[in-house]
Length: 604
Image (cartoon, rainbow, N blue to C red; front, side, top):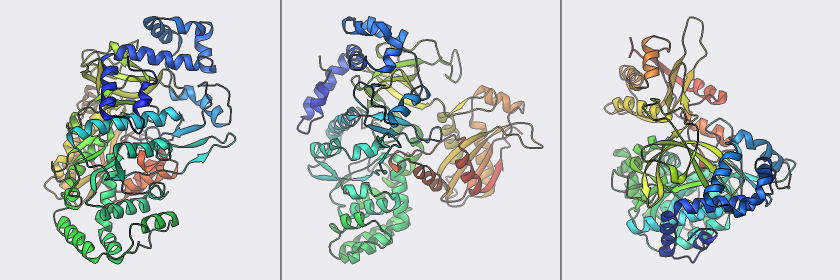
């Protein structure tokens, strides 16, 4: 059976795509057994750790001789479900320099920072060589699948909007810390991925790690133009980053053309490292090429930048990024830049800072229909069943016991639980997924929402998905106004002011273009009426929840929110606009940016 350490061989630079795909076929066929073996490997490697000794105690030494079912049953009964808060004291000790086997037998020498957009602050997560190797593995697997549908030439380029934030040493312990993407971009595995897929980013590492995302974005765009005929893919970690980059292009295209015409980089790029790296590509004036690009941009501007990607990068085969969950709202703008169906959108793999989870084996499917096949060697997965509609209309309540990968049922919703090679045991990820089917014996998952991102004032429970549906319904009313929704977030305002008797939902919109106040009033009412949760509907009818409030914020407000997170340690590559926030600093930015307010009349 393929499993164990064999997958590392398929991550090697000279690994054959057919061998890699063959390996995955075998582990998918034997997913249940591979999962039990994965758990055994994790436990045998780390039985001597403080954390596992605490829960497994005297039975730890007998793990090696147990059968698969017995081992899984023991693990589930002895080791409790945990959240990041349970691991935080251990991780804090590691960050402070404790080199004893706290969570893993081998010392943890690196820590990753999560984006912090879920609960307002970045979290430390252990990062090991396995983290980089599994990232390389899933990228190679994805590339092997994609190449069968969208073949690219060896030596082609990716216009890749990726950003590495500054790595630093933790106080006291000197452990290297930074975002997971920063660790990966500086790893040997990142270089191996380029050589093995024979596809290279337009930008050198000095641009990726430039430290100023606006300067890095400008250089990404400039180098992408200079290599425009070699670009066969446009990509980023998240769809958001691509949309932001092309929004910057709309504002900076004339400067970019001037740089090409003069053969000289804009003085706005102040980083010496970036200037030197870009200068190697911008060696001489190219007025003819600049004129060609300028004419295309003038035409695109008249079209509202529709089809920007195929017009400027005519050999681009597809656009690649994470496009599920909170990224879905950006796919509309991405399709606009991609010229509708001219350049397909391909959703990247499913993972988190804690672990990779599944691969998109059907890259031809649009983001709205994408599913992810669990890779059973990356972690040991458990699934907490959520009660279905017969039991609970929102699927928020939990059944009592998690089930292993082999026990999931098609059509049911689950919260994912991870046990990883990096020292997290029965870790509640907070992601809610639906099992849509199986690839051989490996479950296919559709991502639904983050469990703790819920709007709630009274007996109502509206998830991130519910909010997105309501916003999409309301934003549809903008179609004939010339205005478009740039970004949005929300807040459940439970601070009842004088003269008010109930809490209410506040939804913040940033718009591009103007919409009449009458239309925005209609949008506000339509959004309020679109929340179908029975608890919300009843509460609105009885006035125990007040009218929904729509606040329109000034242009650039959501960019300021991103800059706030980046300034607090998040990387642009990992940033996701929080769809529901209680973060006081973010709420202050939103309040400062508010220029119009509307109250729903949907319930009278």
